[in-house]
Length: 191
Image (tube, rainbow, N blue to C red; front, side, top):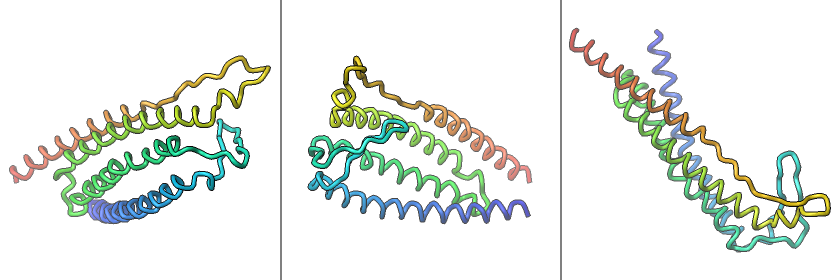
């Protein structure tokens, strides 16, 4: 009975990740169309700058240059293949589970998920740092905030390294599944 619940849940999750995969592709196509529109019509986009709980709306007439917009648009395009691979791997993890074989290939797929997490984390950290730097220069934040009460404005990038912890946990989990596969094979051979 308990095994049946696991199989049913895995079948549902496999379908959910398949739908999410195709929705991500459709959303990416729409995002590319919007990105091309923004690239050729930067003055049409209302600009605001969020600094923690403070939101600044920039005056009419402020527009980005193409050089400032391109790095912002490249970030999602660089992350897209990793996100698609991540969703496809999650779908593949639930495939053997939905067929009642929870240890078949799952360790290898979880390891792939760990490597995707590591690559995605590094790419996200680099792109976040680069886009924040571009935004700092595009909005001229140092000039925007300088007045008689503020002596200096500096840029301190914040990058989270939590993805390293997720990588380690997923990698260890993959070893657990590999060990479970070995135990399952021994059990099958004994019977």
